[in-house]
Structure formats: structure tokens, C-alpha cells
Length: 275
Image 1 (cartoon, one colour):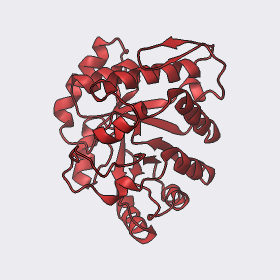
Image 2 (cartoon, helix red, strand yellow):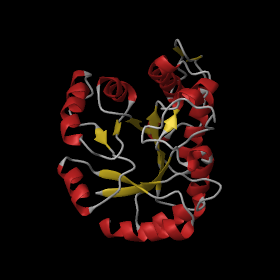
Image 3 (spheres, helix red, strand yellow):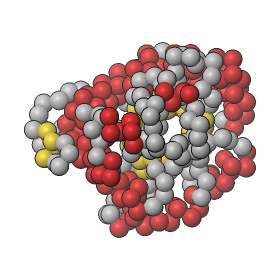
């Protein structure tokens, strides 16, 4: 099983360069970063894991800037987002950022797609909350049009682009894409529409969820290969990783603390027993 890591990088934590080099030196598979542009203080949306909201949410570094720094000092470490709030981005700009990072890293980038939980943050970006999933699907279509080998247009309700010249192109014409979210028809419809697989949080309940995901995959005509399943924010144990492996999971993203170098490196050394 391949083991990657995720953490909230902030202005107070270990740096992207330091953690990326430490991961690669120890043999971890990748580094995945979350994003939040800001957290309105007058928020009404409860934090899904239970308030109070951890302070790192309002201090998060820009994921693409941090991953670019990580790419420059590594050679084999895979790089990704867990997740990108696609509805909060201009998709034409985001397509360029993704393709550039993928190009500069030698094809090491994975896009984790998310829909968000903080309504106040999303509304500051002009996101229609109840239609944010449709907005994400439209934006993904714009990006895929720009990544196409030939100039391709997309005319959508939330985002459009004319047939255009847009380079660089991602390796293989696209990037590996994983959709985050709770199990169910809304999430699985997004997975089957444009992604390579699902990025659940924690990995619990997969035995019940995977049959529905695989049924949706087949019904969408996505072919005989099963969708990828890459759990993120996993607090690892030998038993948990063994159960995930039995379910066919080949990659897990473990959770590191949003902390300084000493604590992060101690945690990495502890997790290295599972490599």
C-alpha cells in the first residue's frame, strides 16, 4: 500500500520545502494539501467535525504555491490537493495553474475536488450554495476543454470558454482527479462524471459504500476497471490499514499535525513503520 500524507500548512507550521523533503527521504508516496482562502469570523456554518474550528483553517497557505515549492525540491514525491474548492476558482486560471504545476513537476500532480462545507466562505466567492456541485461540474468541463489536445469549447450555466490555445497541457492530456465527499448519489455522480475515483475522509464505512460506488461506475459506462479509492486524513494503525487493503485500497493519505518541524517529523517517523 502506498502511503502519502496531508496536513494544514500555515505561516506557523513546518514549511512546504521541509515537509516535502522529509516525506521523500522517508519513502512516503506523496504530499496532499487542503485549501481555504479565508474564514469569515461571522460564520454560521458549523464545522463538520465539531466546533470550535481549529485555528489553522484561517491561516492555510495557498496550496498551489506551497506545492510548487515542494515540487522544486523533490523528484519522486507525488503532489496533490485534498481538496481544491473548485467552485471558488476561476476555472480558466485554475486550469493554467494545474497544468503548470503538473508540467513543472513532471506529471506528479493529482487534483482532489471538493464542494466545501463553509457557506460563508463560498458566498464571498459568489458561489450559489445549493448549486455548488453543478458549478463544480461546469468548471471541470471548462478545464478539461482547455486541456484537450485540440481547441475545444464549453458553454455552461456557470462557466464557459471558447475554443482556445492553452498550454502547457497536463501529462497524458489530463490530471488524475479524485472527488471528495460523503458517500452517496450526489458524490458518486460527480465521481462518475469526470473523475478517476473517490477521496473519502478517514476511510470508515467503506465496506458499505464501495458497492454503491462501483454500481454507479458501471451504470455510467466507465468501463471494467474499478474507480480509485484514496482515503484521506487517515489516522493510521496496522489494523486499519490492513482492513483498507482488504477492501482493495492501494493508496492512503495519512493525517499529519498542523505543527512545527519537531512534532511533524516525530509523527512522520512514527508513521514510517507502516511503509
